[in-house]
Image (cartoon, rainbow, N blue to C red):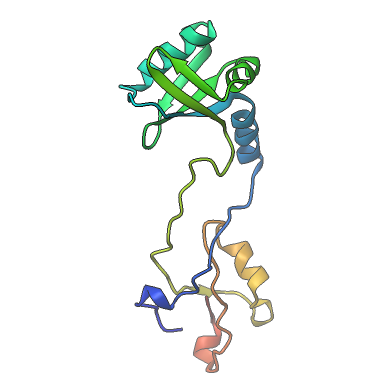
Length: 168
């Protein structure tokens, strides 16, 4: 298998989705129950996450310890509510005007604030010790981590020397 030097030769629609794990599922359920994205939509910007937290907890009349605010991208913030009922109350209004700071709250979803990234690297691997009858995509996928995109299994090896190595 020749290495691909020109990134444009790769399939344009290739993408890799991670398999979910128990830990990832648990984290996503927590985010869905307790977190929202807060996006600044008004003419004034938020100076910091603590500024958003102060205004938001004051508006919702909850204790500062009942919410955590983390700066995200482009004037947006991830807000964690200790109690899911506070999140529900916050989301009940489509836009919050907090003393000059206008926020649009969006429920957390896996795709909210997601970004697209191109795969920039390709590696050819030689997996040794795999019996010839097990040279297939299923076996290779079990060996490789979930973070890898399997392009193909090269089963065109002919010589005895090459048969000892599964090229992917």
